[in-house]
Image (cartoon, rainbow, N blue to C red; front, side, top):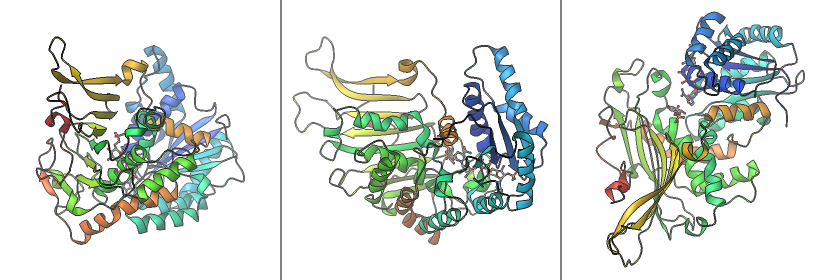
Length: 479
Ligand code: NDP
Ligand code: BG6
């Protein structure tokens, strides 16, 4: 595995955008503060917007938080040192000459043999043009350097066919080993914990099946709307933006069989099998919604039918899961900001105690990362009266440390050449198969999403088996 000790140039294509500002540069700064970047690194932002280095640095400075430095004075020094390594280059994505000029600049900064990490933080529509320009400018060439790697953001395509075509076309430009398809949910600590929680504890495996589990819900909700990203979002919608990738990845890790080893290929194979056994989204079991005010967001066509909310129920056709509803929901402009996986166990077939309820395992991905087991407990002093209690492990209390951002972990993996947490092509194709028939129906029939109030729980109408927020409280789990 390559080390991070050689000089490296980190090129962020689309550096004027939201992802760069909010996630990538803060993550790189954090890696820098922790000593994970090599001595000789430079970060060069590339985009069409006109900016000079000074303006770019001012933009970068606004988003840097120094969470590892106890001393504020040290923090200022680190920020200053980091900003000196940040540069900006204006150019067009489809212009190889602009990338050649970028290449000359990179050579001036770090010499001709520096390794290259190129991050495509751009809308998917410009991936291919950019890839051609990178290739023509020789930036992906590995003859003159140890490695040159390209990170591609989701969504990889719009449906099964376009994703396969994108994979094929990019495969003619970069090798599979150079290509890192990122799904940042795989870099989240709680998502990574699913493997050890399930397969490192003997108590779960015997009950992790249709005999004992009534339903599993995986929900993603954000309080904000599209916030300036409408140009991208309106072409994709929440099913492509969040469900096809983040939620299906969480589902695959929650439900897959135990891999024969921790080798990334084996894990990917089990996830792929699970996704292949999942019946495609059925629109009869699906609700889509659009928040009030979306149509007046800048960049949204006034007749847009793009969904900003979707809730659906999926079924996995395996002996372990046959008939168990997997309730997936994702939405923007809702009343909560959280992502969680809730496993509801069946009620006792017969109970000695009145009022006891089915157990529930709640895995809170964010915020306030935690694992919570909901059990029935005797009320002290009262003979056989039961109440529902939560056994909770809060990450911040248990581990006394702030969890690293997903992008920190994943960027470090790219620098180290560790491909474990990136999406291979077969798994990608299997995930698209689950959503593509529904996406085609939504588009060809121009299915109109239900309107819901900004900041509400989502559309009023629910699909059969669709998740209801806080539903374990509804079922008497509240405490
Ligand atoms: P932005 O909409 O902010 O776009 C990034 C940059 O790309 C813009 O600053 C703009 O730069 C350029 N750009 C935008 N639209 C177009 C267009 N139609 N044609 C050519 N260039 C365009 O996107 P994000 O930064 O939010 O996202 C980038 C990628 O990262 C996407 O694939 C997204 O799915 C993914 N992602 C984003 C996350 C986020 O939190 N934002 C999280 C996870 C993934 P300029 O005009 O200067 O060239
Ligand atoms: C991105 C989506 O992949 O994930 C965004 O494009 C969404 O629309 C974001 O806001 C959520 O990421 P996180 O890490 O904040 O849950």
